[in-house]
Length: 407
Image 1: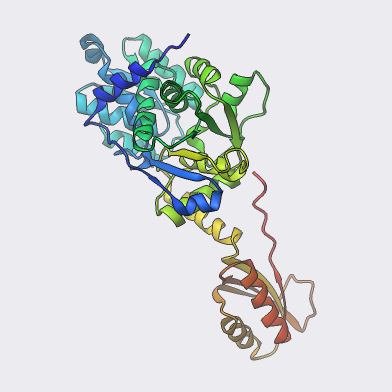
Image 2: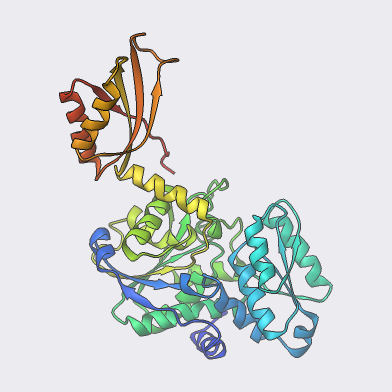
């Protein structure tokens, strides 16, 4: 049984037209070269609240009866869904309460309040926050679920309507997946318009709830992830049913791949994308043979990322690519040696970003010291040229250990 049809999605598109941005999509020639496949990206990060969630939220709100509007709505979210419901409920004159976990970052609370909703901080996690939202719903408010609702799914499906209209040459879709609202909605459209299209969901390997739900397999889940927007502990009932019927495969991606994808999008497309929003590109990075040579549409589902986290992702990316390197250099503790090091690195084309001079707590001669030098370089080969230049000057340099892990 299909609970959401292409007609439901088309009706949603008409309903939300003019109030939600018809976001652009474009072929990325550079990403296509890097990933070995034709890549078209859909910029849902350009929505007013910087995420696709507005589509489903507005469609749900517009489907309410007059009585339901008067009673108000309640939603549970720690991020994009909260802002989407807050914005459009305020526009429509509907009183909205958003329940967020007690330790939700203040910036997310503030954004939701600025958009007009009343925020209730409750519980240690989304599970407990959901219980409180359900209690408020039982008292008369309509619960606007973040993904497990036909109106939400239909609204999210409008992403695929736009994408396939703009790029009919696409023969595959890769969609970030948490609870499954976006993937289910897009799959409804793709299967109706292009039955032969390959549809893949991309999920964090730390929270593979949809993979488990659709395959009947057991997977460990939990822990922090950069893709918190798709870190959903329990997949939706409706969305699981749709995805099992319509989607080819759910793949998981590591945090390291997501970080690399965020940096690629910033470097190549000049766009800021949150971890969850970059999961589709991460899937192409981590599973390069799955869609090689195909014409693939990828949704950049959101762009709400904390600036400090983004800065960390950027710097870690520079380290991984060899553009920032930490060198340990043993030097004789005599005048002029520091100048020799800086001159040699500079003549080799390196730029010293940071330098530390250590004499104690080291397993070296008492007549020696160690420099810890952070150097900006072009790539890993350039690092080796800098090390060779130091060796020619009589100085031994080694690359400092980097351990970001495999996840």
